[in-house]
Image 1 (cartoon, rainbow, N blue to C red):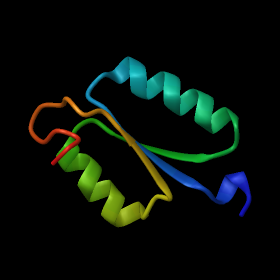
Image 2 (cartoon, rainbow, N blue to C red):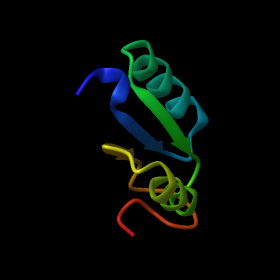
Image 3 (tube, rainbow, N blue to C red):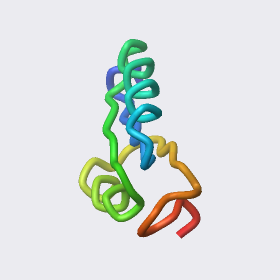
Image 4 (cartoon, one colour):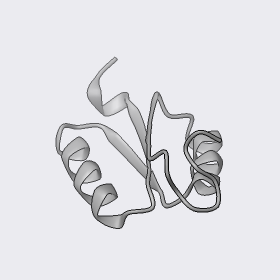
Length: 66
């Protein structure tokens, strides 16, 4: 599998963290999707079927453990 075929979902309520991680992973050639909270992350995970999910544990609405 090539890097450009790998989908990564980033879930965090801090826009700066999403921006930095997204920028660096995209620069390496990965497909990157972002979500601003746990509920949005679940929805995007169902739609995009990412190979990897990187998420914050402490978020409002739905935390990373839920």
